[in-house]
Image 1 (cartoon, rainbow, N blue to C red):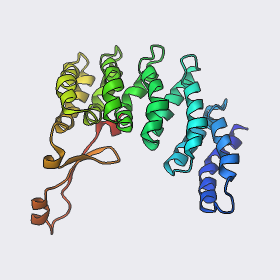
Image 2: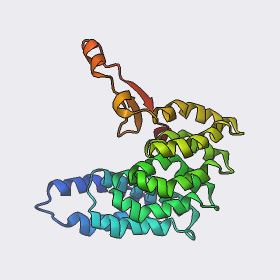
Image 3: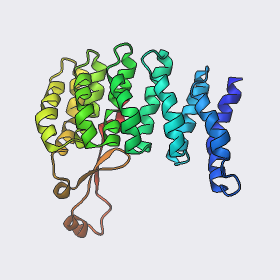
Length: 270
């Protein structure tokens, strides 16, 4: 029964945490018995079971309970199979979604070598606009996961494609994550490539795209500031924050924290 398998998946993370805390008594139980179940349920015929499996996998990765060897030899290969060009549409959409969500939890080397090539392919998927939409919405997170060099070499060309996509929702998603993408690039790339690209979005024929671009204008401009002097930085939760200067801190030492926080567009992307 699918409901039984779904319930089982929901119990995997707490069991895994218990086994981790009791590792001297159960040194290999999780890797031998539970991890294979999680991987297998990623391809279950029932979508609710698959969803439960995906949620369990993300929790396990977030808690750092999955060994690097299992990530590279079990998890990534199955996600690459599910997101292949000839894969079933529903499986492909789910796979690209989980790839984007887990990118921030994996090492940069793993993401760049195993997942980034497939992500770049999916950005150009001509069959399913849903796949391209997920890629566009999570583009900033992928840039942050792989760093500046890979972003400028591989991802910026794909970002240009998505920013000129025929579906306006794609362009809107790009406008919403523009600050996060810009933050990962060098000042020269911001000036010479991203600035003209942003102007095209702010002049888009669709008012929803223009509105999203105007909302991202301030955060995008902030990426041109020198972080050491402006005090701007990106928190782990994807928000752009302003750190007060030492002088402000001293003058307001008796006042509540007046940090200004601007939500990163990538954190709000849908």
